Image 1 (cartoon, rainbow, N blue to C red):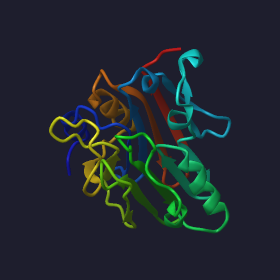
Image 2 (cartoon, rainbow, N blue to C red):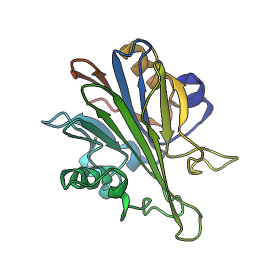
Image 3 (cartoon, one colour):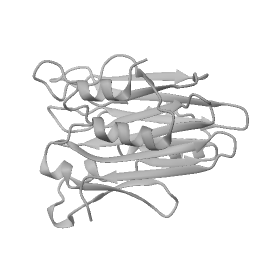
Image 4 (tube, rainbow, N blue to C red):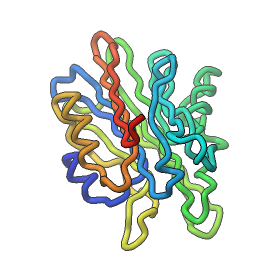
Length: 238
């Protein structure tokens, strides 16, 4: 396992990322979603919770907002004993499919990467499932197999029996050479989960590049009582 700070500090621009993992004592499951940005439009965002405690991205300055469809979306949603988290509008797609009796994986039949050539930002997603007896989670990434042609590839990573003290991280970009927006490749990275929720939150935020980080959302699920706690950190202060 790698430490969170070792991984995040190794990349100047990991983009948007999702983390899920169990604490050492197995009492809690921690979840995180962070966003970064290079353009002024991408940086013009803050995280908020809606009336149902779902995470949404909102503009910091409405007058400066451009390309709303790619940067403003519901990032988390809840359905029965599931928490969905994604980096775009496919949160709603997954939610509707689950409500209609379909599965997480089948939700991606018509979902592809973002239409932002030449970058083609990957769609990353995760679903955390919790019931009375166990915790499990699945990650997915949909990315383009080429910088020049339309060639989507879809990967799913299931973790049916998470280990104590271990989590996984996936992010949109894995910088390679001079290409900061090279798509993530390989399996989700195994990481060590800090002991406390405060340490988990602060470690992620402090490890992200100061120039590019925008917002961080963290969630702590009590595996016994199912109580949820939330933290939000925004670089833009209202």
